[in-house]
Length: 454
Image (cartoon, rainbow, N blue to C red; front, side, top):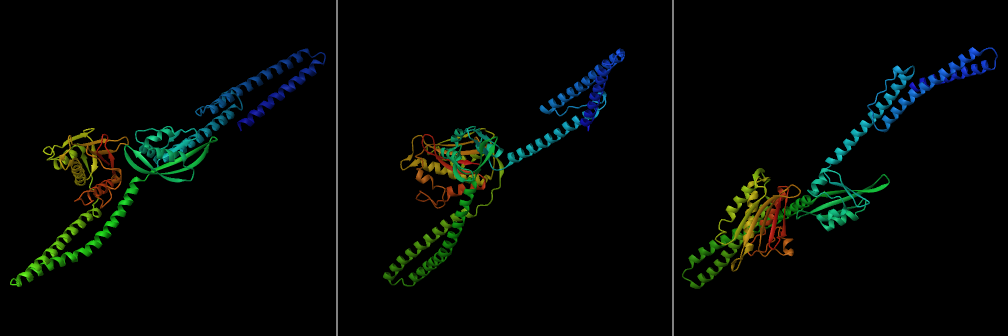
C-alpha cells in the first residue's frame, strides 16, 4: 500500500510539473505576459525541486532498506511519518518486510539448531568423507569412538588400523561392511555403512561407524552359554547314575570279600574288582566336579556395581594372589595413574578376575628350574584416550603364541595339564557383564599383556 501511495504522489508531482511547463511555454509565446511567464517558470522550478527532494528521501530510505536486507540487519526500523504524505506507509511496509525476513531467518536458525542437535545426539557415529580426502566428524558418538584423536583427513584413520582406513576409503554408497577397529591396543569390530549426497555441486559420502564389538561378544557369549548348558545337562544326566552305581558296586564287593575270607583266590579277585570300581567312582566324581566348574559359566549373576578405588582394588588383589611371590623371587610392580582413579564395578567379581590373571602370570614365569631371572609382573591402571578405565596385567615371561592367543578366552580351551579352561572364559564373561572387554597382546619387550577395559 505504501508503494502505491508513493507512486500516486510521484505521478501527481510529475503531472503538475508538466502543466507548469506547458503554461510557461504558452505564456512565453504570447506577448504581454512576462510576469506570468516568470511566475510559471518559478513554479515549475519549485515543483521540480520538490519532486527531486521527494525522490531523494525515498532513495535514501530505499538504500537503507536494501542495505539492511543485504547484511541481515533486520533490527532496522523505518518511521517516516515526518517526511510527508505517503512516507509513513512506505516506512511501515519496509519495517514489515524486514520483520518477515527476521521471522523466517529465526525459523531457519531454529530448524538448523534442531537438526544439529539431532545429529549430535544420534547414538551412531557419523562422519563425512569429501572428494579431496578431508573428513568432517559430525557428532558426539563419533568423537567418543575416536577418543583423543581428531581425524581431519582419510590418512589420519590409519592409527585405528590399516584395514579400517581402507574400508572407509573404498566403501560405496549403499554398502555395509565389517572392519576391525583398533583403539588403544583393544581390537574391536565396526559396522560401516555409507550413503552419498550432493552439496553445492560436490559429492559427499556420509559414513556411519557402529561399534558392534560388545554386541558380537555378547552374542558369542550367549552361544557358548547355551552350548555349555546343553553339554553339562547331558553329561550330568549320564554320569550321575554311573557314579552312584560305582559306589554301590564298591560296597557290594567289600561285603562279598568279607564273606569269602576262606577263599584267598576269590578275595584277591574281588580286591582287583574293588580297585577297578573305586577307580570308576573316583573318575565319575572328578568328572562331576569338572562339569560343575563349567556350570559357573552359565550362572554368573549380574554385577552389583559400586564405586571402587582402583589402586585399593589392585593392592588387595596383590595381597591375596602374590603373598608368597617374594619368597619365589617374583617381583610385582603396581602403577595407577592417577592415584585417585575409580571404576564402577562389582568388587567380588573383579577381585576374582584379578587374582586369576595374577596367578596365571606367576605360572608363566615359573619353569621347571624355578622362576626365570628377573621375573616380574606389572599391575597397572590408567585412563585411555577414549576416557575409559583400563587395567593391565603384564609379565616378562615367554609370552603366548599367536595361534594360542586367539583361543585362550574360548570355554574348555586350556594348555595346562590340570587346567579346566574356565578361568579366562569366566574373566571374559565378567568383563562383558560390566560392559567392557578383555584382550591379550604381546608385552613390549616380550611376555603376555592382558588388558581389562571398562
